[in-house]
Image 1 (cartoon, helix red, strand yellow):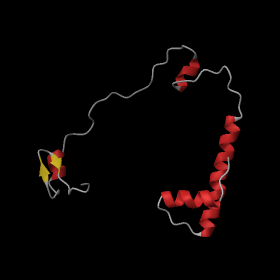
Image 2: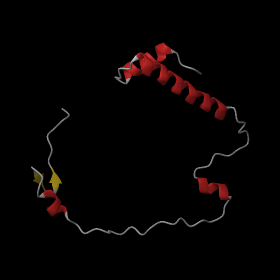
Image 3: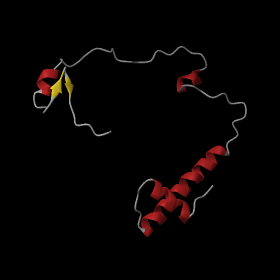
Length: 101
C-alpha cells in the first residue's frame, strides 16, 4: 500500500494541518516508508505461532516473579498547601471554568 499526494492532502485536512508543498512531499515519503516496513513485517510467515499476551509468555510456563516496587505512599499529603494558590477550590478539588457545553 502506498499513498499519493491527494491522500496526504486529505489526511492533512482531516487533521486540520496546513502543509506546505515541501512538507507534504516529505510526509508522503515518511508515511510510504512506514507502510513499506509494515509490508515487510506482514510478509513474515507466522503460521503456527501462538500469539503472546505478554513477553514473559515466551518463557514457556516458567514462573517469573515480576520485580515491582511496593505500592506505598512516598510523599506526605500536601493537598491543602498545594491548593492555597488555586483561585477556586471546593471539597479538596480544583474548580475550573466549564469548557464543554
